[in-house]
Image (cartoon, rainbow, N blue to C red; front, side, top):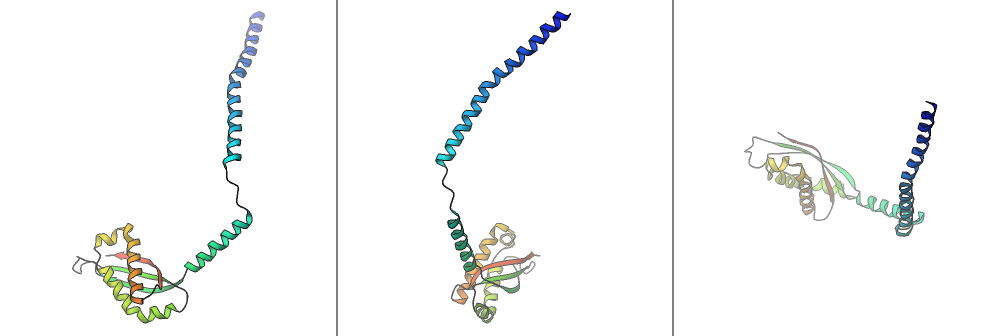
Length: 168
C-alpha cells in the first residue's frame, strides 16, 4: 500500500510539469502579441496635440458658439386648423425664436403680426399626418425660420423652438 501511494505521488508531480509545458506556447504568443501591439502603437499612432493647440481649439470653438447663439424671444402661442380637417381638429404650438444679438427684438415686435400670419399659413397648410410625424418637425422649423426671415428681409431668426406642440 505504501508503494502505491508513492507511485500516485510521483504521477502528480509529472502531471504538474506537463501542464507547464502546455502553457509555454500560450505565454509565448501573449508576449509576441504584446510586443506587436507596442510597436504598432508607437509607430502608427499620431502625436497627441500640444496643450497650446488644445487651448487654441477650445477658444475658437467657444468663440464660434457665442457668435452662433442668439437671444431667445417668446413668440407666443399659435393655434391653427390643419389642412383637410374642415375645422374639426386644431394645433396649438408655443414658439420661441432664437434671434441674432442686437436690436432685432424691436424689429420682430414691429413685424410680429406678419410673422404670426406666415406661421399660421405654414401650419394650416400641413395635414395632421405631417404634423404628427416627429421626423418632419425639423423641416417644419426650417420652413418657418426661412419664411420669417423672408418677411423680415434679412436673417434675423436663427432657430425656431416648439416648447408645446398639441394636436387635438
